[in-house]
Length: 149
Image (tube, rainbow, N blue to C red; front, side, top):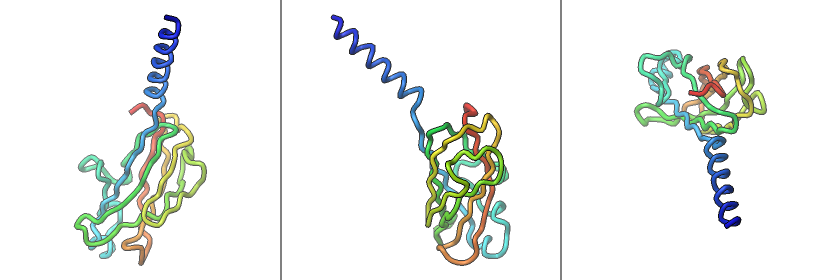
């Protein structure tokens, strides 16, 4: 009977721990109108995140995460005509939530959240290219870690 009670308590503890402290993966996809970008329009006006609220300025888009979560940034063109290659995530201001100021990639960038922002936004810059060539474009959205959203 003691063994059954010990096993039951262990299972309850494991379930509670993994539920309370589970780490999430956030896929952040930036969709851009390639023709409008190449015509010289600002990236924040012709790109948006797939989970962005309609009518929201891309620069105000906020990811809500917790310490230990993984954020994966990738891109795509809105009409499928080209690749949007995410090259860099760079610290701009606020609490730096990652273990370094710049996260690099060729087409996708991955970062694991290390620090809380105490309900204040961490401002960062996403830098990207079209088909991995030409000029670098950028947008500067936000991350809030530990905000409970």
